[in-house]
Image 1: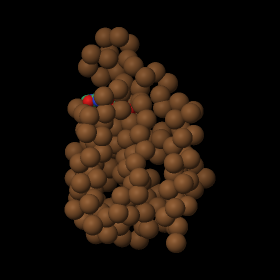
Image 2: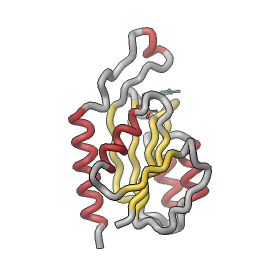
Image 3: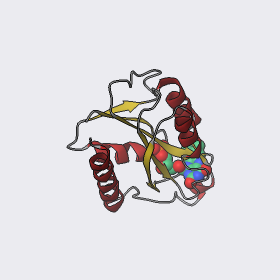
Image 4: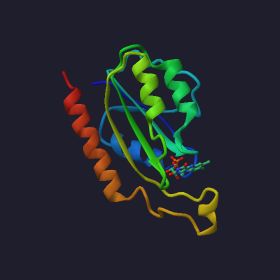
Length: 151
Ligand SMILES: Cc1cc2nc3c(=O)[nH]c(=O)nc-3n(C[C@H](O)[C@H](O)[C@H](O)COP(=O)(O)O)c2cc1C
C-alpha cells in the first residue's frame, strides 16, 4: 500500500516525531508542507495530514494544502499534537476532506511540548511529550489503520 503523510510541525518538531514513529519500518513518504507548496498525491492509496494545534486549530496552511492537493475520494487520516487545549482539533481538515468525498479513516492526537506564550513563563508544559508511550500508541494506531485499509 502506498502511503504519504503530509505534515506541518513548526514549534518543537513534536508532530514530526509522531509521524516519523508511524513511518518507522513502513513504506511511507513523509512530505513537509513547509517545504512543498504542491504534491502529487494521486498515486497514494492512503494519505495522512498532520499538524500541531496553533491558536486552537489545525494549521490553516495544512488545511489549505489538503484543499489544493488531495484528490477527490482519497482515503485519509489525521494526526495532531497539542499543548493542552486542543480547540477544534482536526475538525476543519476533516470537513475539507469530506467536501472532496474522501473517507476519513481515523485520527490520532497526543500532547506535545509547548513553550509558546504564557507557557514560556512557567518553563513550558508537556516536557518530554510526545514520549515513548505516545509514540508506541501512534504506531499501534497506524498499524491498525493500515491493516483495516488494506484491500
Ligand atoms: C503559535 C502557537 C500557538 C499554539 N496554540 C495552542 C493552542 O491553542 N492549544 C494548544 O493546546 N496548544 C497550542 N500550542 C502548542 C502546540 O500545539 C504544541 O506545542 C504542539 O505539539 C506543536 O507541534 P509542533 O512541535 O509539531 O509544531 C501552540 C503553539 C504555538 C507555537
